[in-house]
Length: 76
Image (tube, rainbow, N blue to C red; front, top):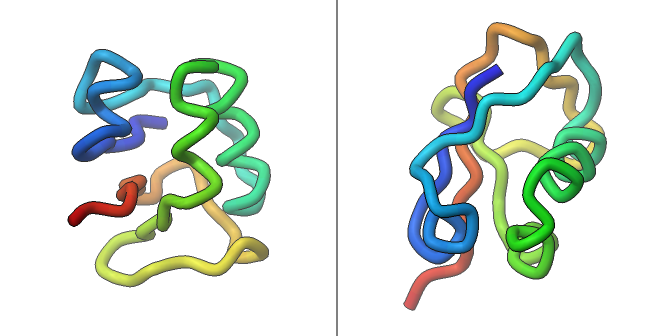
């Protein structure tokens, strides 16, 4: 799965996207997987929103392998 990253989160990871092995799970599980894949992103993940397609997702929402996913940190 490719996860789009924005602003300070992209800077922390050093890329505008992150490719992860993903067979499905919740937004909460996806955050954990991103944190493991890129520990530099971990401090921003808890304060970031996850978008699935065109809507913001709740922690218990399901994320499928083919979903369009973006993680957006707080911006000023």
